[in-house]
Length: 324
Ligand code: TXA
Ligand code: MG
Image: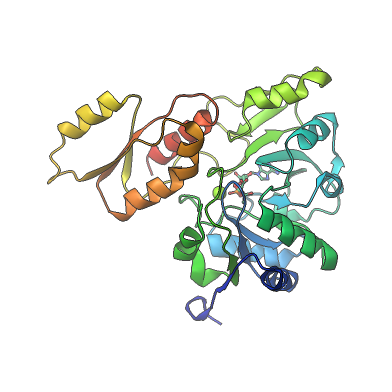
């Protein structure tokens, strides 16, 4: 069947629909699933040809590693040959939730997932629907779902079922509609294999939260600097709308710039977000997608303060604004 002829099954959160989704996963198909961060493009993490389909559908370069999603910390341990004290502490503190742990892989992890690396990224998602899928999938098969964000490589991550359908509805077998993602930006990634443990991608679980959880262990985590990430695929010109993105630290500077624009020559859309960084994060990707759909020349965006999840929003916006 060619791509255009493919029908994407649209599923809900019912028992029969979850069973249908799991059946498709078991037979090597692609199912988009809602998570609390962004929608994931799921496949059986233990099936090489199913995992390969993720790369083809997303047009993601081979070798970019994927996150494995599992039901609980017990299952996560089986995918690592060294689920160390840092991983135990952070997994116990934040799972299920928007945190991904990078640990040494076990022999259960196939090469297609890690791009041949010795580490694997693991996450226990909190979204009720994703949890139901994982539980049902554990009953009949591996219970491990590889899932990158369900967008085409390099574009804005999806936080609603409509986003996924418009990007890749014709490339996947099914989608489960779980409503709008509550967090709205991708999980925090902590590399637990290095000393000190290091945040490779900012998210809702901030450095302060990580370090508060690690206090009893006496370990103090740090963050990568320079955006020179060891997690491939998180460098610049990612998360990018088609329009140019211009960033502002204050509303005054944004409005001053907008006022001197000749809208006939340089059509723009402005995004001022929300005072509450959690609400800003939840809406961020919808705001970028909606702005881009108007095909402006520029999208003017107000940066949030660098507190709480604001730091992760800034990280995504700097990437969206990078030349591409
Ligand atoms: O919130 C999320 O994390 C979402 C939901 C669906 O769980 N997933 C997600 O996946 O954002 P993806 O593939 O778009 O981003 C995963 C990031 C990539 O930048 C990848 O390079 C990094 O995790 N990663 C995965 N495995 C890795 C590894 N073994 N070493 C270094 N980086 C890794
Ligand atoms: Mg992604």
